[in-house]
Amino acid sequence: MYINLSGLNVLVTGASRGIGKAIASKLAEAGATIAVHYNKNVREAENLAHVLGNESKPFQADLTSPDEVASLFDRVALQFGSVEIVVNNAGTAIPSPVETGDDQWIAEWNETMMVNLTATGILCKKAIEHIIKRSSTGRIINITSRAAFRGDTADYMAYAASKAGVVALTRSIARAYGKDGIKAFNIAPGFVRTDMAREFIEKYGEQYATSDIALERLTEPKDIAPMVTFLASGMADHATGCTIDINAASYVH
Ligand SMILES: NC(=O)c1ccc[n+]([C@@H]2O[C@H](COP(=O)([O-])OP(=O)(O)OC[C@H]3O[C@@H](n4cnc5c(N)ncnc54)[C@H](OP(=O)(O)O)[C@@H]3O)[C@@H](O)[C@H]2O)c1
Image (cartoon, rainbow, N blue to C red):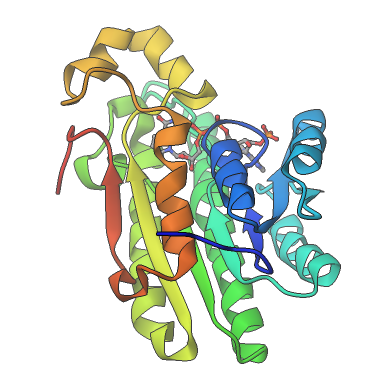
């Protein structure tokens, strides 16, 4: 089986590090041109875009700002001429114990929802409009989490809730826009060795993360990226709406 994505423009959010970086790299290896979205890590994003080749480019946007999210899609579409695939990968996991003061807890809840769910929703809306306007076909791949199904610890209730929202969003797009040429997929990782997981592992210990998985080592970003490339290829279009668990059998729903 050979996957050739050359000629396809892909927006990967949160591509400056972690899972997004691995996804961008795998997609570019298959020939795609990548819009390497980042927020703070400008140097990593610029360097990655250069290394990926295929005329890939970095694009900055703070996903806590709805205006920046909408203009991110417009800027990518303008620069590349078209966007065929969006991978909503960027995410934040803010620990918010219930003992936190109300104002702070609510602010952290809102930030989590904005980055993980609202920004994903806005980029999906923009992609749907763009693809329908061009009478073309497109794919949306949303990175959700095992937490959407299993729930999370007390500190990460907002995170789990935001990721459950992403699952419902993706399924709705698949049902509503399939005949318009749009396919939508969820990928639900468990623990993946990135900066995001490091905070959790430092608090609860690596043993906590590995004790409930069925494999001998923690999942790495490179274990997620090939599935995204496969879904992007169009070979799995009749799985539109599905969620693919990549959590080493720690929570299979
Ligand atoms: N790691 C895990 O165990 C795990 C498990 C399940 C699901 N996931 C999901 O997988 C995805 C990637 O996670 P990861 O572990 O690779 O995370 P990570 O290493 O913490 O990287 C997060 C990425 O998102 C970007 N980002 C964060 N806040 C942003 C904001 N306000 N505006 C714009 N971009 C922002 C960061 O950009 P900058 O660095 O440029 O600021 C970075 O590229 C997330 O959706 C996460 O929820 C992760």
